[in-house]
Length: 270
Image 1: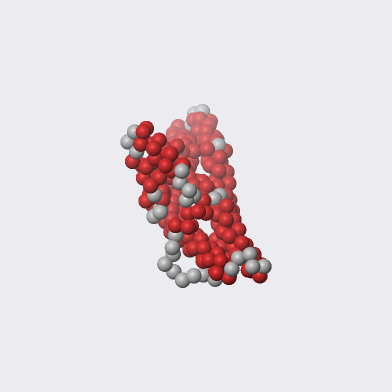
Image 2 (image 1 turned 90 degrees about the horizontal axis):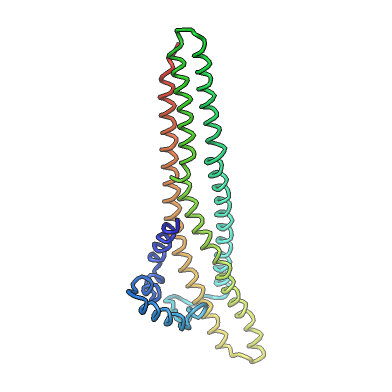
């Protein structure tokens, strides 16, 4: 499980257009010995361009945004990520409950049916009547079929639900970061709103205010770029994982249906 999650994380980092090219990430991938690792680690720890300072390195090749547009874009991100976070958590809860049923009560129910059918066949066999051997054998095999179905049900979550749950766990982690990201952007927007008072009291110049709007616009473009990447990955990931889930579910039910057909075939039409 840990290796699987590490591989998923590495794949995601390598797909990110900025992170994948960063010096720190390349150091993580390519260091050859402990000395190189420590040197790179010390250099990264001294990097001052962390947090909101990263925006000072950006120069978007796009027109400046006005404050209303910036605020609307930020609110849209906040609303979507909050709604998606709720949706992901709901699916995780439902998935966990379904997993428990598939590995606990549900197989036991199929096992009970199987044992009950085999017990019935044993009772019928004790009648001493010569003309029911085929029926008793058919009922016994039907009982065994239900025991096999019980095993299939218990194993199935590992083949499909597992991957859907892992995808949701990963996105739950991503979405947990957005409140802080949105909070930083909203804080910057509020600072710009307060700048009118500062201009009025001559604490800053109108040009200073314009520079503040420009910097917040840069933050907005960065947020939109990250959201575009997020949405692109989200569409790809959920299409892939739900497709896999449904493919495995189809195969699962087809396997069960085939076993039931074979059991049915042992009972002649009378």
